[in-house]
Image (cartoon, rainbow over all chains, first blue to last red; front, top):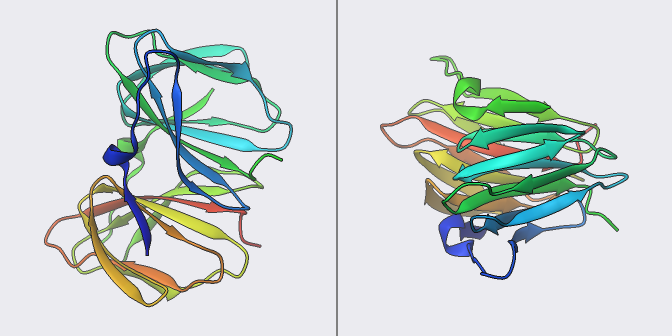
Length: 106
Length: 106
């Protein structure tokens, strides 16, 4: 059985946000994003893939479709295909996001 | 922006496991499954869709591809398309699973 301990699949870098793959298939990506204070994923979009972020630890400043929201642990947010989205850790603590995207972008 | 507080999207029933939709699109489902002690999702499979479960609260007895594993909070498990999978709450506490499936089954 293919299972993982999410806490053991975290990796932070002083350089930039780390994307840590958890599961991947032809249908979807399932990653953890690990952001130290001040790190970010720049605003971008995927023409055909929907993305969902879940805040597992810390506080995330999301920008999706031009709107900004600060979301804490236990919040989930949807970024539909074609809509510009990004996230920033503007807090003093580390941030861990669970991120799923489908279908897997080409 | 389309965001939700996962803790507020939980619903338990004495009758059976509750599937609570969080987000849904043409590409994927994203739900919370809420199981009281003794409740279960029967073993089944989807020909074309992959499923990932994350244990958000409690302890889950998974059966995937004929193997059984008891997984606690913070564990994630992959059930590939075509592989029989199910889950049971054999504990004395409530169980909450985050479940994502792609693509959305027809």
